[in-house]
View 1 (tube, rainbow, N blue to C red):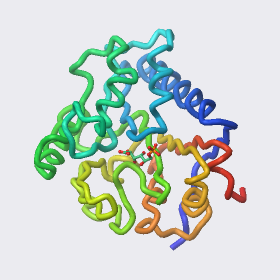
View 2: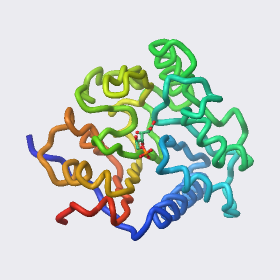
View 3: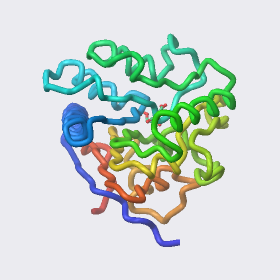
View 4: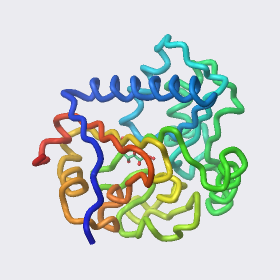
Amino acid sequence: MTAPPRGELQILDTPQAVAAALADLVVAEARSATESRGSFFVALAGGKTPQAAYSLLSERRDPIDWEHVFVYFGDERCVPPESGESNYKMAFDSFLSMVPIPAQNVHRMHGEDEPARAARAYAQVLAKTMGELPRFDLMLLGMGDDGHTASLFPGTDPRAGEDQLVRAAFVEKYRVCRLTLTPLVINNSKRITIAVEGAAKASALHAVREGPYDPVTYPAQIVKPRNGELTWLVDKAAAGNLAG
Ligand code: 6PG
């Protein structure tokens, strides 16, 4: 199967530069969407990479119409919101608790609930607040050193359950359960950004962007907006194995 286009690649000198570029992008997209359409729907990535960008967002003084910003999550660990493992807690502590966004505008995945039920419940929240096939203005993603993204991990075909909006997945590698948006939702976004940092991810980034199309082995390859833009924000260390 021919590989899909891999998206725009921005290589930045340092993780700090990636964080600044990601924060700038969120601010720009939020202002553009709220000014032109009256609302901004964003799905946040978890993990460590976006944390510095989220902290920068808490310090920005740009006039953002937070009343009309609606925050969701690309994935979540099966843990309660007060857990140090929670993607919601990371985002809340990094910036959501420090900006004037109405609490009801933030929709976390209920990692504390039975996973399949939590996935169904979140799919209902998405359908109720965004329609049957949600289309995010901005989808933030990261990538693991094994080529996973969101909680679409190697060994499971990310295209499985193509009709679902949200999936509960047991991740063999970590022997944990995760909740994740599916490619159906991810690839319906207007804009997708994947932020990748560190030499540990250089091999996976090369395989994902320049290797044969094999999304079961490298799930991040499944990210291809049907009608939108894909931008990779990577630092030089992560880009170390890229040819082009
Ligand atoms: C998560 C994320 C996950 C993350 C990658 C990269 O729940 O951890 O959604 O997909 O983006 O694992 O994580 P780091 O940024 O910590 O390297």
